[in-house]
Length: 210
Image (cartoon, rainbow, N blue to C red; front, side, top):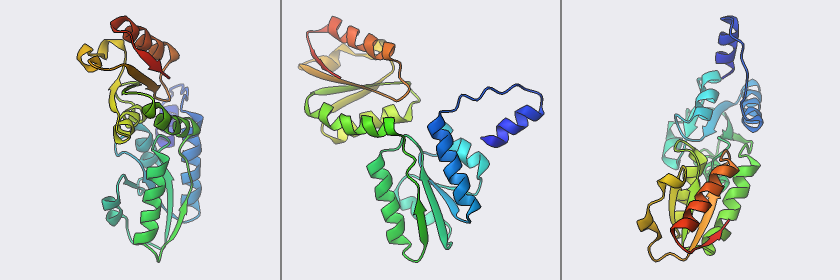
């Protein structure tokens, strides 16, 4: 959060900020909504590092991830909504519509802050699942968007596993599988994806779709 950066600089530390520029955009849009008098609402996962940064600067922000949590938003006249950048966009839009449905008397402003790489991956995942029997989503164990890719693949009716690298692959997952799809989180290195592809080809004769 900006509060943390300021505190560290005041303590004499040299701060190198490597925050994703698209996350900074979300931060600025929420700040603008707050300045304009809207109660800040964040659609995202409580405890996620990006959400923690937003709440750190806007402690009165409400974080919601499902329709049941809308009831916890204070009854005010104006709500300003943004999203964690790695949330599924259709889910975000559905929640915004639900807020408007539950609070018809409230002025609701929504800024779409889901990043384009996340949108592109989610859109491509549908085609990937149609062409595959099994999907591996490759990314760090704590990567929310990678975990979401695996969950979405299952919702599309495909077997799916979230793995960090080739050592996570279990041979029993491949039994009876002829076609495997590979996708990756927004921060996953190409080298990590290639290492998984190489390992799969070592384990069996498979068709890989990426």
